[in-house]
Image 1 (tube, helix red, strand yellow):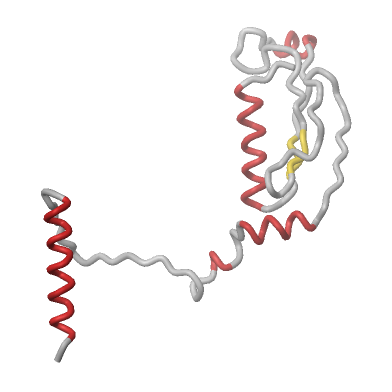
Image 2 (tube, rainbow, N blue to C red; image 1 turned 45 degrees about the vertical axis):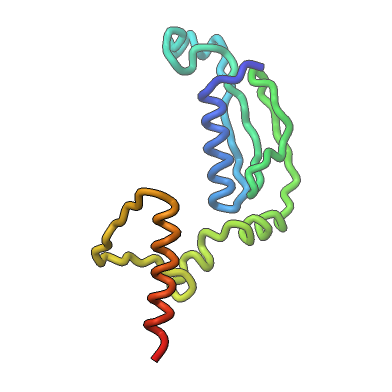
Length: 143
């Protein structure tokens, strides 16, 4: 079976959509025959230039393929058992519509106050300055 970058890319997009939406995805493609290529005059083009192209599949909510690989030049019916519990498992792992979208649980803010950047010459100076800062912080806490 000849696998091209277009096929891999399309299947990767379907797998990504399955994971992002936590849903089952039917990746459906059609089979191109030499007769169709001749009729559409695509033999010299970058796409649709060789017979085949039938790489349909069913992907689960976790992105795994649930159907067997099919022959790219033969039309076939695909069957898959869909376990709806896989949707719940996927949504527990990545919940794109749940707590991520609740501002009372997750908030992204920006501190736009000006910061002073410091560059230290060596690790020794860095450690010495850290110890000095700790001592000064302790002194500031004592009444």
